[in-house]
Length: 640
Image (cartoon, rainbow, N blue to C red; front, side):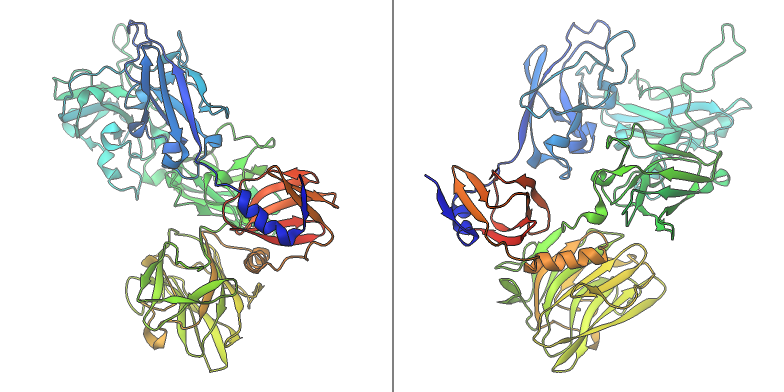
């Protein structure tokens, strides 16, 4: 039987039928070679899976369970992925038969070619086949100890580095990488001559049998050797020498064991390179990431938008770099080709050949500029989320449900994981005395040259909300706008790599400050509801007003997004839906008296279902607030 009802009744029915989604898991069954190990490529003593779900960390690969000599199985659970941005649908992976990439799956004889990444087809169990291994892992008693490794290189090589599984494959010599200088080898003049230089390094390994390492002639992977990983073949010998020179005069000529992709030119040979980039229409911000930044996802470099809409990037003091462009700080925002596929290879810059370059980006995997999903959402409806309480803050009547109610001596603190951009938006009702609202302070009191401070000062009837931002050597003051005591106003601050803005009720106030906020010496802890602990002077103590619907973004927001965020918080949508009938029957929502698209959004503005046309809509929703939007208007749905 089917029961007719309107949207005012839909809430109750939806609450009784929606179930929580379960965590995603998938099983992978793999057939492996096992011929007794005659050629060193077709024996399997163990099998593991490694991929983007664990940061491609071979030493942290997931062990597979042995079924028989040629079959292994493993079940992966999204909840256990170390990279929480990766889902099973986006998983890429390979199999290895040992604790290092020397033991990765390969194509079969005769070439044992490198293979691309495996992808999940979407149906469990996934069935895979390994034809051969790069090397075969053999369990032997470990051989721990100190070993000295030398390499004799051409005279043009003035620096040499070695890295491997003994140090977690640290990027060779990368400036700023913790302990990376430990990869640099020492020049040994006594063993060098007119034909070459000898470099040496002494390392400790817990098992020389499993030792794998590579040499580079400079402080980056661009200078690595052409050959695969080296091994320590005779663990009874405390030293070993590798030859990268050879002897062309010998009969027959002796070829070098090691050759290199590129020779580092030294600091004097490094150059600045600029790229000018045409981005897809509508791109508001743009970043570059690459080998010059060690592919560190916390170090994206922002481009400078030009008057013609293009972006300018500067690669400082480089010799060679591989890189990509992004519309935001994360892999899902990386550039795509004209067909929306991943680029076949990274972009490259050779500073010895070109110092000015024109690039064009065809598409983005996802447009960071359009994404308004917060990294933190605090509705203050009965809890303070992951924030830490100082004192005993409480709750008051909010703009929507409950709100944070300031109390003397109380505030919240929340860790902030950002080093470039940040936005915070919230509804605010001021009390009649001054106070600190949001504070991202420094490591010392009264140091306002770094971080920011949002606070208010005024009278019993009007309070002026102001913003102080440290720009490094200086500080800037934005005198903001007056808000009536006891009245709600929506406030947002946007801090980008280039400027800062403050919004009142979705409207930018005054011109943006065209200077980047300094993150140096900033305590990565945001104070909510107080200037304490670093801006408590001038009586900017606990704010006794109300704060509601607080959202934090690890990006700058646009003018349009400031309005959208305000609207999401309050339900200020186009209009209520009229004369549309909705039915629920047999686990489906059915909409009548309407022809067209219907979209469902969650409270962060993320699309839950899109382009649902008149008919049925099957969904599995968690508790919360949702927005059902049609061309005739929108309405708010609550699933309890």
